[in-house]
Amino acid sequence: MMNRRMSSRSVSLTSTFLLLAAGGAAACDRGSETQQQGFYCADANGVVVDEDNCDDNRHYGAGAILPFIWYSSLYRPGYAVGQRLPTGGQRFAYNDRAARQKFGLPATGKIGNGTIKTSVIGKGGGGAKNSGSKKSGG
Image (cartoon, rainbow, N blue to C red; front, top):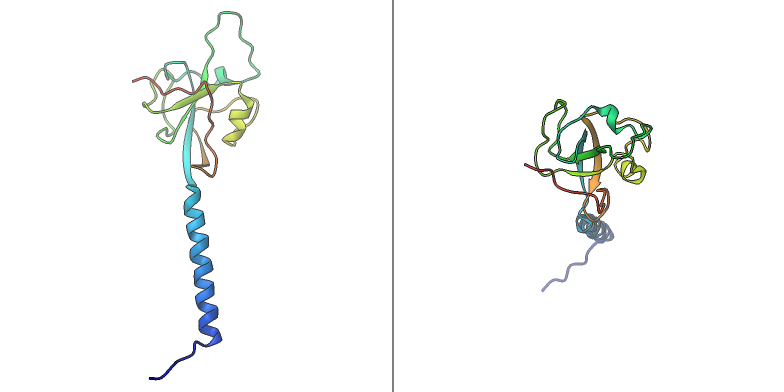
C-alpha cells in the first residue's frame, strides 16, 4: 500500500472551505432576511387616510381619532385614501419616533403614503415590536 501525503495547498484549501462553510451556517442561523415594507397612514381599521394626518408635527384636540402608520411586506404604492389596506399588516402610533426609526423612516414629520423601505427581519433584527401593533381588519 502506498501512503499519500496531503500537500500544504490541499490543506489550505480544505481549511478555507471549512471556514467559509462555518461562516455560511452562522449567517443562516441568524435568520436574517431582507424584506421590503410598505407604509401608509390609516385609521384604526386600516382604511387609508390623507398622509398629512400622520405628520407628527400636527396637533389633535381632545377626543380626536388618531391615525396610525400601518406597514406590511404586502403593501405596495397605489392604495388611495378611503381604500382598506390588505389584511396582515401591523401598525404603530403616527408619533412613535422609536418605531419610525427602526424602519429607517424620519423620526418626525410626514411619511408619504406608499413609502417603501427595505429592512432586515428575523432574529438578526428589524421589525418593530410594539404593544400597539395589531393586524388590519378584513
